[in-house]
Image (tube, rainbow, N blue to C red; front, side, top):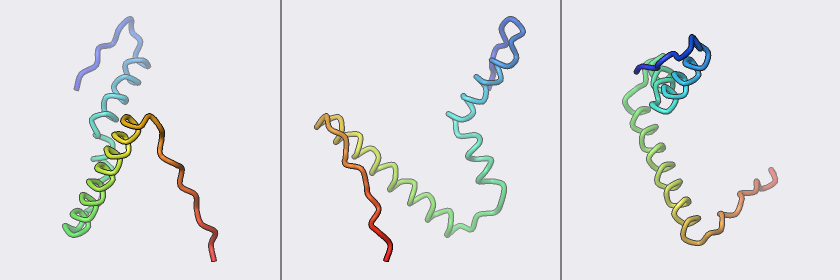
Length: 79
């Protein structure tokens, strides 16, 4: 990954680099690789991520089609 520094503005180039790395998922991958993850835990995490991704896409599709956002979830009182 490469970022151009213009007019010796290193701070702006650093911000651009961090944003690109965030978008590419580099920070997330580094955090996941800090510790060993058992294969069963990895499978469960990937499955949960997929479910979240599918639900998010369905929610976005519903919002686009109906023009109304989904109702907010309310937490039930604890017993």
